[in-house]
Length: 203
Image (cartoon, helix red, strand yellow):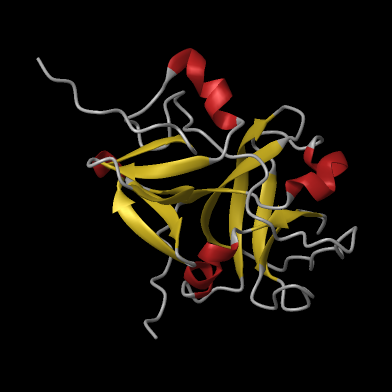
C-alpha cells in the first residue's frame, strides 16, 4: 500500500461535521485561531484529526480522505486560522492550516451526540476571491449559491474525477474512490455536484 504524501502547507480545508456543533460554529469569526490535532479517542475513527478552538472546544473534523496526508506531515498538532464562515441553514467553516503548533493544545471535547460526527463536509466552500476553488468555473454573484452545495471536480474532458475536498497552494484536493488525489487547479473545473456536462459547441 502506497504511503500518503504529506499535505502541502499552507492549505485551506473545509471543516466536516459542523452540523452537530452549530451553537459553537456560529460564534466563530474569520481570524479566530484554531488547531488541528490528532484525536485517537474518537470512537468512529482513531485516525481522526479534529479542529478545535484555543480553549479546546471541538468544531469538527478534517475530512476523512485527508487524515492520512495530515498524519504524513509528522505533526500531531497544526496551527490554523478561520478564513471564512459560510452562513446559511447550516453554517460552515473554512480553515487555513499553516504549520506546526507552538506550545500545547487542549484535547477536543467529546462529540455531543451518538451520530457519526465525521461525515463529509456539511457545507462546501468557495474560493476567497469570489471565484470557484479551481478558478475556472462560476464566480461573482454565483459564488454564494456555490458555497451552499456539494462540489465535484471535473476534468477538461468532462469526466467527473471526484468530490472537492479543499485546496493546497495551486492544487485542488479531490476525494475519489476512498483516497485523496491532487491536481493542478488550472487543469480542472469545480462545479456543483450533479450539474450536466456541457457538450462542446459546434459552428
